[in-house]
Every structure is written in structure tokens, then in C-alpha cells.
Length: 596
Image (cartoon, rainbow, N blue to C red; front, side):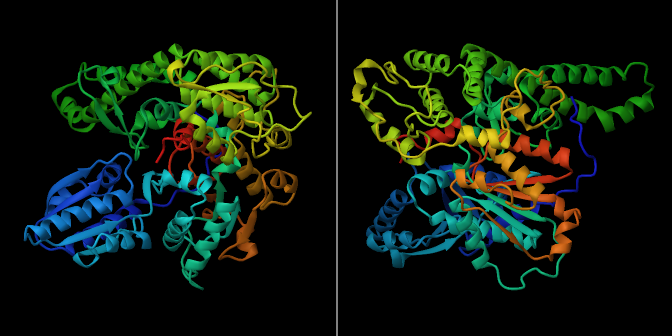
């Protein structure tokens, strides 16, 4: 099951420094209020805080009590008036306390305005915990800003652009200078410009770089990839169990006990690290072999003398027990994934997706989607299939559609962001001519006529697919055990557009020859030489072969697996820097009309 590839890939930089910097700054902020203190923390920050400073660390710096603030949805502008009520209540009762509000990753002017409106601006001090980057693994760094996607791409709110630029500047100051910066997308260009504005002339020119090139890409450059079902192990774990801040909570159905267990899923987990990038069809075979190897290792105890047994217990037994525990967990998780995917007719779902990607049997796909909606299996899955149909077929047309009236804004959002696109007359024969079933039950359903008569953007997926050869030749046997290209992450059916773009730009050292592709992707591409001269950039030193890819709007684990494969094949090491980890469910949930 081992992937073939070049063995001369460079070593990755040590990103643990990012965590130490964040922890040191938090401790500094806490020490600004000497003595015992209570800490009220946004519930969404609990997992993130746990990765940086655990309860013991907080206690060491005189945090007496820790309170989790759970407001649904959590919005800063709702929390601040609640905080102001506490301050005013204390003042009315004659109780004296000191108050400090720490905003992360940055403080906005509007926050101070709210405090002033509430009449407590003079009673509190405010500060900023500039915690931009959380290393989730050796090659994954996250801003942990899931709101970036909706705020920027739907609402047009650009407040996070500076945050992303500041995050890039932090990486640059610690691991740069960069030789070249490539990018595509409107937001990518703005983040690049924000970063350039923050970097002083001559900053870090003298040091030896640890990262050579940077590639910035907007999520809306490639919506197809996150809409596809994930079939690599790490992606499936995220889809089923929801990985959060690099950890996942396995329930009793996985742990085979009455308790849930929260575990880190990263390269420190030896079992997980060997199967994370594997197509799920290969996972059970690996786990079975691993179990046999462990049993063989345990069996070595037989026939040992006392000294050998002592050495075995002190040097090997603990590691074997830990590996056995992890193996049991991943076997349990795999069994759970298998049951859930079988129950949801997963193979039929994959077949439909692959047909849509290839442009074959589209009418049969439409029938499947209609049936899927009628059976009310999953609203998110129904939306996902509709969006995939829309993008791959240059839009869709409905004569009559029935949806719950409360989902009107959801469809408006999907239209606005480009997930439901306008069908151009004569461009496709695939028209949804029959009624689409209800996404909600009859009690709440309301009829809409010509719901998509004015859909906005036009998709160029089919032309892009042909130009970049995103669909491997049909009819050829694809061995998922020994993959030949990045398409293995989708069972050999499709090479992710985002990753293919990165591969092409790196091969060409820029966008030359890709003019037609960038035109179909609405442009905003750029390639800028950074802190090294042209000769140095052409010589593929170790830093030159370390590529930082920044996804603005989220990145899937499938894309990360594809980039790891590409790195092994080409002798690169990719570091993924993303605003957040995403998948089809998270992407669509962010666009629901009840999202606040």
C-alpha cells in the first residue's frame, strides 16, 4: 500500500513555534490582570484554547474559574451587550471588579463602539490576542476562521482579508523570505496586497528561508472538489465524525464501551498516519495486516528469559499497547463508516457524482437526484447534488419546483455565490423537466414557480475539465492500491481542479500557457518574484521545493491528500495553510438561510 515516489523530499519547518508564540502572548495578556481572575470564553474557542494552553497552564497564571459562554449563534455584537449588563449590574450593587476583554484574532473598531454605546467603555480595558495560526499537523496550519467563507464570498465582508494577510506575514517573518508568490482569485490578490503592505522593505532578507514558494487560491475558484463525497480515510472521518481543531470525538459505537473518547488525529498517531491518505477500499486490508504484525510482536514474549522480558517490558510493551489501542479505535471507526455509508446507498451516490463529473448518463443522474430529494434522506446531500449538477452541466432549469418557503434565502445564497448557475440556451441537453420533490415535509412546503429563472453565474467546468484533463480516460483500469495520479482521492474519477492548477503553475513557473484557463476562472491570477533573484529561484534547493498553499475560504482533507501525493511524485513538500478545514456539509451549512 505504500505510495511510490521520490525519496529526496525536503524536511518541513518546525511549526511548534507558532503555538509557543500564541501561548506566550496569552500568558502575557493574563498577567496584565494580577491576582485571581475568572475567564469567560466563547464556546467556539474552547477546542482552540485547549490546543494552546490547557487548564493547568491557566491555573498557573491565576485563572480561578473558567466559564464557557454558549450563545447560539455566537456573535460578538451579542456577547458585548451581555457583558455590559454584568458590568452595569456590578456597578449598581457597589461591587468593584476589573474587567478586561480580549479579542482574537483581532479587535475591530465596531467592538469599541458597542462598548461605548452600552456605557461601559471607561470601565473595561480591551486587548487583542493576535492568535492567527494553529498548527493542526506537521503540514497543516489553520486560521480556524470558518466564518471567512460566508463573510467574504457571500456577504462581501472583507474584514478578514487583513487577518489573512497578517497570518501570511507571520509565516514570512518566521520561515521566509519567499522566492515566488503565485495566486488566483480576487480575495487571494487582496490578501497578497495586504501582506505586502505589512512587510517592511528588507525584512528577513538576510536569513536562510525555510519555505520557498507560496500559492494563494480562493475557494470559489473550485467549488466542485468540496462538493464531491470524500473517500480517503481522513476525509471520511471528517465527514462522519467532524474533526475539530485536529481532534475528533469517537462515540460508544467506535470505542465499544459506554463512553466517548476524544483523540488527536495527526501524524503522532502511527496507525492513522499510515492510512489517512488511503482510499477507503484499502484501509481494512492495512488494519488487518497491522493487527497480525502486532500479534507477532506480542508473541515474541514467549521463550524470553528474565533479562529479555525486562527489556521487552521497558522498551516495547508500552508502545505496543498504545498502538493496539489506536488500532482498535480506527477499526471501530472504519466499521462505523462502512455501516453509515452502506445505509445511505453510498455506492449509488458515488456513481451519480462520477457520472456528473464525466458528463455521462446525466438524465439518469437527474432521476437519482429527484428520488433522493423525494425520499428526504438528507437536505444537505440533496443541495450538494443539485449544486454539483448545476456546476458540471452549466446550470439547470426548473419548470416548477417545490421547496419549503423558509429555504428561499438559501437558494438565493447558492445563486449569489455561484453554486447554482444559469443555464445558457443550447449549451446542454440536460434540463430538469419534471417536478423536483420536497426538501421538507408537506406541512411546511410552499410552491415556487420558476425558482431559478434568473440564476447568476455561468460555470465553465466542462471546458476546464477538458483543458486540464481533470477526468482520467474512461475504460482504463484504475488500481487504487497503486495510484497513478491525484484522481485516486475520488476513486480515479476526477483530479481536483484546485490541486491541478497548483501542479500546472509550479511546472510552468507561472501562468504562461494557462491564459484560457484563467479567463474561464475569471482571472485575478498573479505571479510575483519575492526575496531571491531569478537564478536562485530556478535552482531547486530544499526551500524551493517547500510550497505553502493558502486556501482562502476553506480546504478539504481530500485536497490535502492529493497535494501530499503530488509532493511525493514531484519531490515537493506541501504545507497547507487554510482559513478553516471544510467539507461539503460545512460549505453548504454556511449558506443556509437560518445561518446567523
